[in-house]
Every structure is written in C-alpha cells, then in structure tokens.
Image (cartoon, rainbow, N blue to C red; front, side):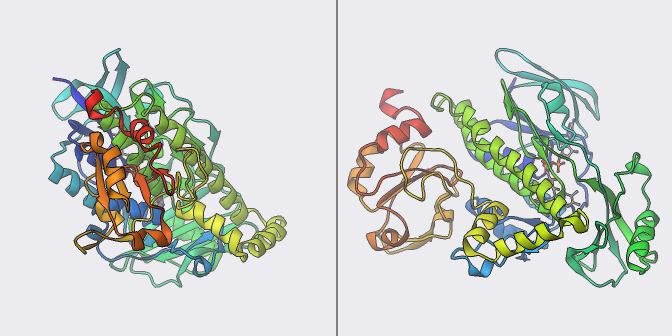
Length: 489
Ligand SMILES: Cc1cc2nc3c(=O)[nH]c(=O)nc-3n(C[C@H](O)[C@H](O)[C@H](O)COP(=O)(O)OP(=O)(O)OC[C@H]3O[C@@H](n4cnc5c(N)ncnc54)[C@H](O)[C@@H]3O)c2cc1C
C-alpha cells in the first residue's frame, strides 16, 4: 500500500522532516543509502533559531551540554552582548550526535529508517510518486503521495526531478580533518594569513581537534577520495611552521566555497529541503541549521495536506517562504568567504564592515541573519513587529490556574497556538478549529509587556496573526493557515 510520504536521506534534515510528519500522524518512511550512521563531526554548531526549533519539540535538552557559539561575519566579530535579545547559537555538538538524537526521536515516534536503500529513480503520477531503489535485498520500488528529497548537496532527487541548481562553483579547497593527539594553539574562528590563506583549529569533544587549512590559490582537489592526512599536515606546516604529522586522523575531507540554491523547492509532489535545496561554504556554519528550519516549515504544511485539512495554497508557501532564506544564505556565505579570504585588497572593506558592525543597529541586522532570528515571512497585513516573526519561545506565560509555562512548551504538540488574554471572544471565534489549534488563555500582565492581547502562532512557531484590541479578522487568519472551520468540512 502506498505511503503518505517518502523522505530520502537520514541526515539531520531528513530525520527532522520525518519527525515533524510523524508527530502529526503521517505514514512516513525514510530511505537512507548508508548502511549505518556516520561518525562525522561536520556541523558542530547550530544557530539560535535552530536551538529554538529543537526546544519547541522538546529536543534541545536531549543533546546534553553545549556552549555558546562564536558570532562573526567573515571573521569580523559581532558583539552580541549589546543586543536586547540573546542571539547566541550553540556549539560543541558534533553532527553525528545531533543525528543520533534525531534518529532516537523518530524511532520513538515509530518512523521506519530503512538503511542501505539508495534511491536511484523517481517518477511522478497524478496520484503520487514512485521511487526505485537499490537495497540490501536487491532493487525495488515504493510509492507514496509525496516525496521529500533531503539527500544532501549532490541530491539525486533534485536531479531526477529536473530542478535547476544555479549558483557558483567551488574555487577554493578547504582541507578539513578531525584529529586526536595534537596540542596546537586553538584558532576557533580561524586565523587569516597573508595573501588569503587561513588556518583554523577548534576543540570538538573528547580530545578531538577540528583543523581546517586553506592555502591561497588552491582549488578543491579533483579526487577527494585520494586525500590523505599528510596532504593536510604538509599544508599546515607550510603555513604555520608547525608539524601535525604525528596526529591521528579520524576523518578527513575537503569542502569548497560553492554556493547554490535550488531554482524550485517544490515540483509537483516532490519537495527539497536542507543541502539538497541549498549548499554554501561552512564559513557561516548554517547549512544544518537552515535545513532543520526548512523541515520545520514544511512538516506541518505537508501533514495538513496529507490529512485533507490544508487550505488552498498552503503547500506553495513552503517555496515562497524558504527559498528566499536559502538564496540569502548562499549569498551571505559567499560574501563572508570573500571578506575573509580575498587578499590585502580587501583590507579597507574589512575595516569598514568592522566599523559598521560596532553599531548596534548594524550588529542587530547582521546577528539576525546569523542567528536566523531575523527571518520574517510575509504572513499577514499589518505592521505589528511580531507579525511574520517567530514567537519568542522563551516568553513565559501564567495560565489561569497560576501555572507558569513557556511558549516553547506549548508548541510541543506540533499544533497551532492561540494565545489570548481575551479568552471568551478569541475562544468563541476559534471554537471550530480546536482540533488543529490549542487555545491558551493567559493573564493580561504577562502578555501586555511584550505581546498583544491575542496572537495566532503557527505550528512552526511563527506569528500568523495579531491585531491588538480586536479579534475581527481572526476567523480569516484561522482559515488561511489551518483550513475551513470544522462545521464547514
Ligand atoms: C566541515 C563542515 C562543517 C560544517 N559546520 C556546520 C556548522 O557548524 N553548522 C551548520 O549548521 N552546518 C554546518 N555544516 C553543514 C552541514 O554539515 C550540512 O548542511 C548538513 O549535513 C545538511 O544536512 P542534510 O540532512 O541536508 O544533508 P546530509 O547531512 O548531507 O544528509 C544527506 C543524507 O542523504 C543520504 N543520501 C544521499 N543520496 C541518497 C540517495 N540517493 N538515496 C538515499 N539516501 C541518500 C546521505 O547518505 C546522507 O545520509 C558543515 C559542513 C561541513 C562539511
């Protein structure tokens, strides 16, 4: 029997997508080419907004101890301390730990993660999609109503769906390794060297050091599979004079400064999320983070569609909301790399940008891009500053029985949320949406300080509607985002 959704790829984004779907009762399966999880550290930090997304599902605490991430743009530090709101991301969590946490979560929810299954073919029919795969038991086919390609930067799904991937090729190669047994001086956000070279060394967990080397003028190697640790140690020694040759290498790779964003995030019944939809140099440390936010944006919309509750056009808002974010990330990452690695001729620009970032407004704007707290979707008419922005998950509320709670905790069900100090009127308007939206009455003193009387929050945590002092068009907002009222179904 056909599934509701097939997710291709059990990286962080595929797992998050599957969890978001299953949380809402969707029959979802994950196909993953690798026979077993990797131990790759890759994305060892994530942004403030991604931490909030994990928190909204009760997942942040499962990651264990983290520390605040550094904030810089192209190596130019941003003083987050001067901002009113905490924009710090988290660091110190190797990607395999994030993946393990997510795989445990989707396992508890009951999502099958089928490993050793490489998707090789895809065709769309009017009713759904059919994928071909090579698996441990030989080739096979599976069909579903929808498919989400979370299969990384070289996405087979993207190519099979015929979706373009415009952007720039990688011109620079960055040799990267996780090494034990070395005690080189740490350069956590990296150190620029004359002529556009750079070296970085930062602690991961358990005595592992991540080292990165870029020698100016060195393109990515043609055959990355043949890279050895000696190649990296030689380059490190040429640039710093220090020898790392005695270190024990756990993982070596080479990333590039290629930046691309998919021309479409949706084609028919096929969606792209994460690196399949956007690649960028890790200079911004954002690929995993923005991908997880793609998953959180798509999950509830696709689930509502599968369950026959989605309003007209809801699924199209995925591309409309997330593609600009992916395109901005690809552009910003290119800007950060050029700022960082272009030679001495960039020095005056670096000075000017540094001066600008010392101003609170500029720092707040840049920090909004780096933390992803600056994301604002075009969700409703009106000029209230919360409209289209994420509802701060740490905002604390007092319930009628005196219990204190946070917005993040109220979003854990994965449903919409109507926060109101005007219980009777708002509850009356939303009475036919209570199967999709939780109505939470709070005390006026709590909300008056930072939020208006009534706020409609989407399941991904973004404010879809608010209009201080009235609930006049709340019914339209409910229908726009959550579908027809129950009586009309
Ligand atoms: C050195 C380095 C440092 C980084 N640091 C950060 C950071 O600090 N913060 C951050 O946010 N990001 C960082 N990133 C980026 C981050 O690692 C990626 O953005 C992230 O892995 C993307 O997740 P994903 O799930 O979209 O894709 P992936 O992690 O690439 O997962 C894709 C999955 O799909 C599977 N797959 C592929 N093809 C098929 C197929 N045909 N059939 C079935 N399965 C398939 C793959 O095996 C893989 O498991 C870094 C990247 C690198 C290289």
